[in-house]
Image (cartoon, rainbow, N blue to C red):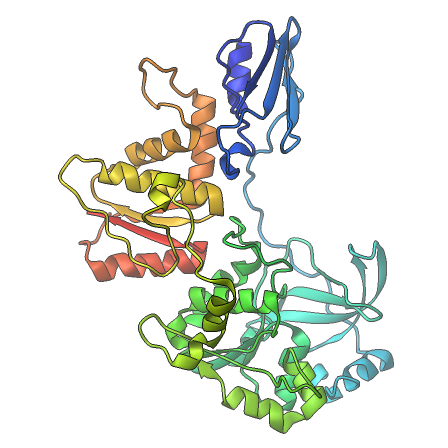
Length: 459
């Protein structure tokens, strides 16, 4: 039978003593995300029935006993095959045709894409209502449908359906394509004469989180699902919205698709008729100006190849706000000497056995915990199991092996492996002779598929 200590360790709670009474320790749910990581914010009470706990920072609570366990963590489940729509949209109604006409999008354009009418449950509205239905097709097959309420801006999609780019069949063998933020923007560009246009299925992130990223990246799985079609493109024009979320989307698409083949659009911003997207440009200025915006798209900045005008916003921000440093290393004494910024190369060197690899591992764990970074790691010194054990040690703050300090439990190890597995991807020379080009090719795949932000090469 598991002891009370074992059951607490399954939840990441490690106590200095398991005698009856109260204790305060660091919280395994939130302490690693806080600036004061060692603040004992989790209060644990042990009595003759078991243990109860509550974090006074994040509110996490639960209890265990020798007999039952009422609070458990959710377990990962295998992903089931994507759902498929049960039926295609009905014919577009007069109301839908008029709705698009008000946006200067013609009936022939909407019929070409199979856009029609449907009733759908819209979670944001809490009801089933009449909607515009946008079928998402790949190779002529409808794999998803996006529903938009006619009366208000609220959306839904087929639950569990595969996420792909809307219009992926339109690019065919084209070498160039445009990516926009919404279906109406794609249709507006079609009215201006552009067919090879793709729309992201979920729009841009609704919040800008400084220095952070959602570890699961659900908004970008459509890139991996359309990787075959995207890989053929030589030039990609990013024509997303001119607002803060749109800029975040633009940066993320350029990073994942390759800045060297991306261009970006600037929408008209005159005081009399400013525009934030393609459909507004069509409404305010007409198809000729919309075409001009696309034709005047500028190359996306590439490290080492910039124009002065690429840095206008940065220079003005420097004038107004002063210098901004990169991400914290996790150690205040080190931050005085260096911080970590995306796009920069850091070389760690020193005499043999001086702890270079251990330092880099700890730095990666700090960045993963603080900012949600993911890493591709090519290490020729560490066998995979031993490297995972080292990362788990640094995440938990507990030893993997027996020693003077109590080693991590198997339950803690499995919990740590889940955390490590979501943030670290190992590049191993299983069948190939490793070269720099080989490593970078594998890293490019990790960026596209998993959204990694850092690459570590430890020779």
